[in-house]
Length: 277
Length: 99
Image (cartoon, rainbow over all chains, first blue to last red; front, side, top):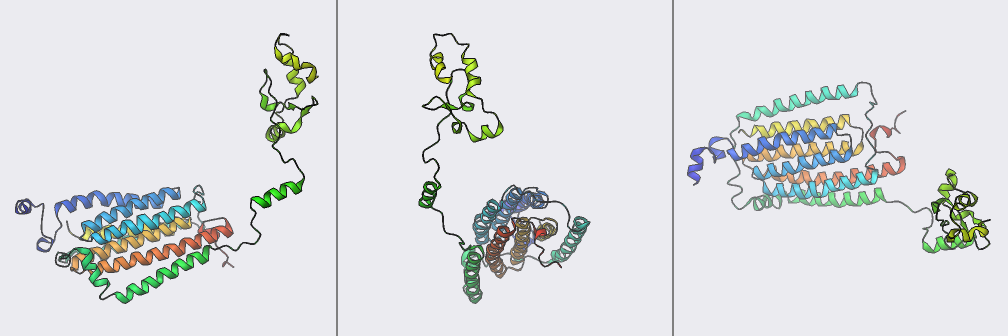
């Protein structure tokens, strides 16, 4: 089977031909434009959340490319560490800082954007020129190193040659965690206001402890804007919503009474007429 | 396909990341540009590990990821701390050192 595929040029040995398999080529040419477009989204996206989402696309595609490049361990780590932890952290901070805080596009320095674009193109040209000098290298491939599966091969090097680096990196991670806690810690300057303190303050304030009376209900009027009548027949000012009072949308009981007057005498609405007066 | 294509892709991603750092004003997006540059460097490490047939490149990429995670934690904590005192996440507003 493999022989047939190899003859068809689908499966080719990297070490023999120096070229990748056709499947990998198709994968690369599918993912590479997607990645570059998503990365450009970072430069041009107006909202920070869109930028974060396009970076997630780039990072997941990179994980797929790692797996294709004989590095399945790094592919999994990329998904877990980058898209799983780092980008979630970014999104959390975006929520904290405010999603709708749109980026200002006014330049602090005159023409800074054009200079930056020029520098970017220059940097890209230099990097690609340097990288293209590796064109003539004959790729060896990792078939021998990955003989015992890739994670085992990587683990042998990490816990062999680089065990000291690993421990230093562990210390670095602990330091970073402690640093983050210290940086975001806030000292409480005033006493915490809990339920008990709020209740005490309300009693001490001397205002009404019960809920305010509801607005009046009348057959011919939207009750929200007319004051209810108290036991003594007088309208209760505070029964109408404060917002309506401030806006001046409140209606007096006398106004409503004028409309109620049209109703035939048999309806119960009239029975309260004397009281309204 | 020659493996150099991966290196060119990584160069493009690195350039876009650097451009983001230069152009954008929002500190969080600038940070994402730094992350993009680190990722591009990782892709180069993985590709060269394959070219040379040596897993050490992958190990270095792994360490880069760990250091990037630590860097993100501290960086975002600094952004949150600045946002709390200044109510802004724009890099232009942090200009205390200006004369």
